[in-house]
Amino acid sequence: MNVIKSFFKKIYYLVNSVGAITLLLLFIKALGFIKVRIIAQLFGTSRELDIFWAAFTIPDTIFNVLVAGAINAAIIPVFTNFLHTDETKLKDIFKRLTIVYTSFFIIASIILFVFSREIGEWLINADNLHQYLGTAASVSLENVDLFSNIMRIMLVSPILLGVSSLIGAYLQAHKRFFTATLAPLLYNLGMILGSLILVKYSNLGIYGIAWSVVLASLFHLLIQIPEFLHIYKSVPESLGSKLHRLISHLWSKEIVSVFKLALPRIIGLLGEQVNVIVNTVISFTLSAGALSAYKFALSLHLFPIQIFTGAISQVVLPKLSEEYAKGKKDKFMRTFNRALRQTLFIILPIAAIILVLRLPLVRLAYGVGQFDWWATVITSWCLALLAISIVAQSAVSIILRAFYAIHETKLPLIATFVSIIVNILCGYYLTNFFSHYWDWRPILAQIASQLSYIDAQTLFQVIMSFIQDTFRWMQTRNLSDAAVGGLALGLSISFVAEMFVAGWLLQRKIRIFSWKYTYKPLLKILANTLIMTISMYYVFKLSDFNLDTTRTVSVIGVTVITSLYGLLVYVVGSKVMKVHEFESVSKKVVSVVSPLLDTLKSVIRAKRNEEKK
Image (tube, rainbow, N blue to C red; front, side, top):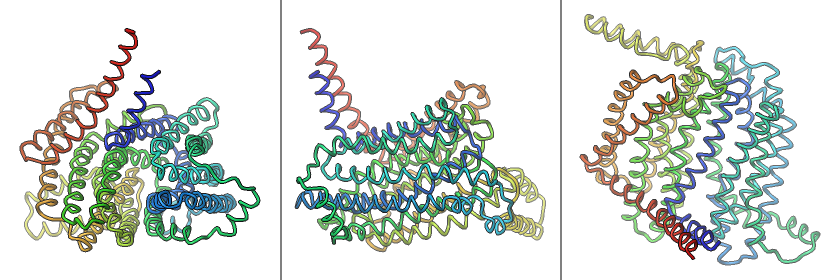
């Protein structure tokens, strides 16, 4: 028993390290991946699942904008401040915020419940949009009814998650990170259990997934309540006097200050959710299953961002804030650039692997049950175009931390608005473009052959003809399933635009980028990644030709061989080009693994000693 207690005490101590955060995030995201894989197995890329994703967008947007946006930007800092000055005030603010948020979510859920059918007609059956895009409606009235019913079920979720997130913020203010971190883990477990029980064994169909969201949200809340009750002890008071005092002073200056602090971040997240809604609307002008394929590709491409970039971003923000507060601008610049370089050093090769191995990765991730070959091809097509987004989103995440550290939350909104505009324009024009043809190699080969024997005047005509055809294709919709690739590429381009605009604004605000610390090291990493990508491509083609990739074992073999070869090339290239980040990242990996191994060895040793006694 003592051995087990000792083990968990050491694990609890290690959980605050960067490596432990990364490992815990990895485990949570692994469960999230299993959740998505089960959904893919049960429904494939069907119109029914498209409707679910569209219905899920509404409650998810409410929660992400109003709660997730306020937690890190305002609520946790305010809670932490009052914890060290006036804990009674902290409890009072917590109760008031809980009442305000819960009341708002209940009212919003009731309104959305009443108008769910109208929202469905606007979102998935918009006549004006079809008329503007030159497309025909691809959904029926039954689909709108299904959307309405599913959305009504899931409207319970933001209420539960809102309360749970406030409790989590309260726990984090008290440095009870472990319990707060368990909440998303239990959410994924709830989705997995709900999907298996309610869909696979209870035959509830797509409604089972909707009820699973509610069950998962309940798990998210319940896991935090015991720890919360343990540290939260309110002053004895009658229920009537409690309600009267809370309601009469509901909008105190502290509550107003929380919303003022959170407002810029809320607006920024609202902008990001606009992109989600726009892409959802456009997806219903495409073939059935397009939205599901796009969502599955999104889930895969977010995996490295949420794990590696998330861990580095979480750790670097307090350090940047401290250095800026102390006026150490040189250290601030070096810390920021080091975090940016380390992030891209890890993310760029992962993006290269995803780009080259998109097809086998999708097959291994989702290729079961109802997820057929068409779903595999169209999802891998989206994943390839989202590979660019992995790099851009990671860079944006680090840049935003620099803005928050210098207490600047308004300038990033400009970059967000630029991203929205770019995404909307690209969503329209690129879905049209890819709806005509998605394999451009024959066209490029034909142009190349023409260039070999034509004169200068004819060359100009060929180029102009190609440009005219391209613009015509971008303004008219055709029937190719590849059109959904326009959503993926549009999102990638929008994040690239946000990255450059946010970086430019940060440089104007505080000179932070330089040739020595930023551009030169990143160019070496980029060149190394390019060499790795080309090498991997030829190894992938060679192994793909020589192995029977209709079998899962062969697909795993191709993936492992190509990935290991690519990583070997990347490591050797880092050594040859003297990429400094290779050594620093290697040291961090050792610093993470070594304590865990030492802890495990000590537990095993103590267990053996007890057995000898």
